[in-house]
Image 1: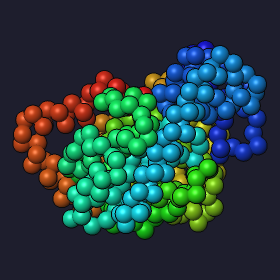
Image 2: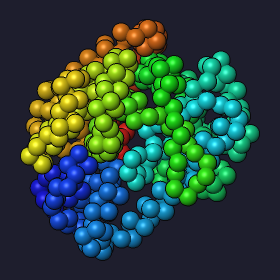
Image 3: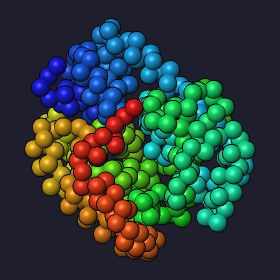
Length: 360
């Protein structure tokens, strides 16, 4: 395997933002697969190998992950159909990708009146969903109808659902559900008649940026490729919508982080920055500290976000009234020393950040 697995994977898989360009002939490698899997781009790696006629020893793994992916999609379609039938406003987020992906679990955001959130949880219990972890900001469900075996560690991820009251880091919402309601659309999944409620790309991109920076302080290559596929499909009006949603969500530092990492990877792996990416960088901005940090690690992915970027992103978010109220609620909870230590450990421990973000 090459000394730089990130560069190798990107040069084997290519970039959707560079259509028509020839990329390197891929090499089948177990260690490279492990890096791709950790970044949730293993199916893109398999596709590159398949196109080159080089998928051999990893074919069994590909078939296993493909089977898991199909089961996950079945769970997603049932979830959205069940909620729609119950008249519950929602959207699946951070789960379906514009390329074949295998999420650890299914994230779904409740978009109805918050006073009815508990009723929606009771409805789910009546539809053969097992409650496995109630929390202040989310219910955790296991889809028992799919026939899989329940494991607490979520290994395999196929039938697990996080049903969010709001998208939040502990008690601080990082996205305004009222804004997101304007960006819900139907996604049609191959093999199913029932559509899945999802967010339009301009909103999903902002969700991914804030989730990566605020929730986990880590950016895997799946974010790089999700952004790349979305951006390539956009015209100028679509790119301007991304800018508008970013501004409305006070997401500038988080978006700058993702875009700067993409710029660095394009420049260092392909030798050029695509025009559409450059346009967003000029409109939204750069986060040079993240570019330097990425290069200092030898382009290691997933990329751990600097603490300073996390802090700046938090203070940008609390310009919004909803996030500001949640921020002060979070501070009040931190008067409990046990909670405070847990929050600080999650924020500061790179070991925890690295482990928590494992793809399983």
